[in-house]
Image (spheres, rainbow, N blue to C red):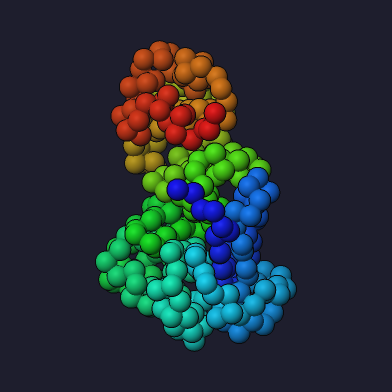
Length: 321
């Protein structure tokens, strides 16, 4: 049964909060209200009710102090440099521990984990955070089961999310949990989030991983391959673009990227296919050809092997008719 009254969301701000971690969810829930009036009642709160500046120096005036916002359905703790200071982390953890029993959900975004992990509420649970801080969080809080590869993770009443834009992903997941996929997808479209990612997807897309790893010799080639996936990308053709023999190219490519050219190109093609499936209504056969598969049957089988779901099922999962 869907909620009949507004769901009360408290976004906990503090000096040094990451701006997007805070305002991303705020905009997502307000976009939901634009589509379904009264879906959410959202308050920006602080521990003391006083104005504060974000990490990027944006001056923010909260609606009230956290203690004045009760009852709270969902408490969201954004990340930011401020929360990585011991005194503020301890104060936030004490407040979370005090309010969590009265909340249906507690959400940590990015390094908001520094304010939730000390409570012990996440001990033994799978969590994620921004990839840059995952090792430090895991070291400080060894009782957590860190999975820094994920965009967001739900474990019972607790949600943890990776950095910055993952705040939108987890907000969409909360909206879908509350009101179903039609509202969450409407919000995604309104925010121009071109693909609604699941928590099981990786923080880094395949093209981004590819381009980050590319050294000077392969930097231009990385961008060229991503832009020409529909073409016949033979080893000989790729090798000629970087002035190497096919044998030299294969060896150096494998050393750089940890996999063969054929394996990585297929991964890039399948990653691009996922975008096409969500962004367009093109037939599966057309998408297969657009990303370089010469047979839609080969494409379907490769897609299923990589993602554990058929292209058609993937499309139905992420697009509301």
